[in-house]
Image (cartoon, rainbow, N blue to C red; front, side):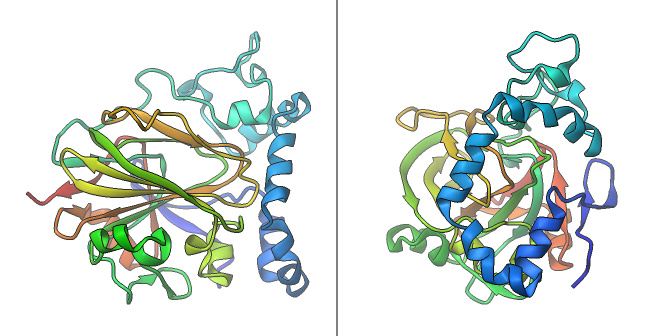
Length: 305
């Protein structure tokens, strides 16, 4: 297994090597023989919940400036925190407040072409035009499908053989996610489970993580892309998955749906067969086992009709 995680940055049009937050811990728990034995402990929900609480403390804010420097985060793209400060990096009252920071007005724009699906989060994407039981996930041949992720026969049938997108959010990323189109919520439910890391290093060792981790599922009826299953997957050290939009109300393209508190996370979206196709660069890179970093609001897929 490669010691590096490589991805293609669509904006810069170049391959990059990912800087992993907590690299040593991830490798210990998922590659070291002793760590593998202990990995079930860190996957327990109360461990991640407790760690998430520590990220709400005022003391946690002290690590924000060094985090920004290490991962070269451009704060000009983000709003500051709730504290008064001459320097934006010192304006966040806790690490979690920094973690769920919002973009400044105009920093990202949602594609408004009705037949083009905009990126629902800023993340590293894999994409498939047709998902079936024989689909190989680009790490260690993981077999997965809508049925195993949704755990609901009523909705699983709707998405059989349809397209799918996997968006992986790293701890350094913007951690809010948005609706990709106008529409309404048909149903939503939780599936409880462990909270393993969703880092490719962990997925290579435990390929069933995406269909075992705790997740929140929304079934959406959209204007231009038919029904979508929007799946928010929890991960190690994710203190909470927050639904910020009232699902009793209709939603608009680009409207915030929710956010993850501290930790790397994943959003999976399933579609109906024949309704939309993945963008060529995502599909091609997926076939080569490489994720594509896509900015919030940029094009992910094209409606077929």
